[in-house]
Length: 267
Image 1 (cartoon, rainbow, N blue to C red):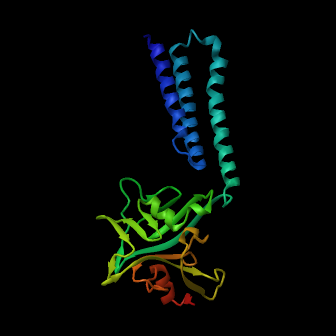
Image 2: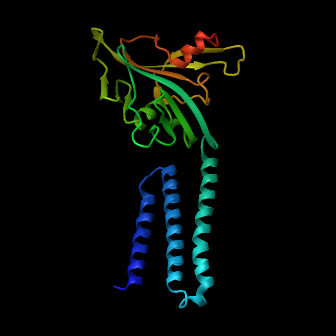
Image 3: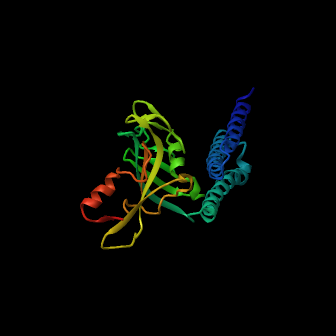
């Protein structure tokens, strides 16, 4: 096989691999992201391949300069148009109509033991996904374009960090182990229950002080983070395994500090 044929073969091999990669993630956001990466790779391969080809065979291809120029410019232009167009399209169809930066604090308790989420690994400074993650700060970060706000709930957060949250069960990855809890397990000598409590500001524009309320989330699957970057007025979520109760005594650190400063009033 000649050297030129080998180069063409390698080009086609990487071309096919890049194109197939676009079908790995079935979600719309995942597909668009995969397509974008694949098109950039493909365009880059076209540019490198034809530029290298022209450098190797400058004399032989001297009469095809315009054609090679088009073969380089067209894929770069098409990939740029796709990136720009897909960005606009995703923003238009998303629930948030563009990127957001929301925060909500959380605590997870197993009886009287507060659980600490596993720390980020490697070069990453987060646990979770680019859109939905935690930075070792007990804070849920929603950063990016949210196609469907129903997909950034507390149960979705548990899932994206490697755990699980159901009505009668949760698993939560800590630094030493994954903690598994089921309704009916003993807590302080009595059967315990998985419960989720929400502290939420009911007057977010109040300058004289925030007023918050606490509620028990019976249908926590319907919960969506309040659209605030600061906490408070962002939410405080308590996931707790304990004896069944109507209210919790646990409170996120950010809420506790604001309360001590007189910036937060309970209701």
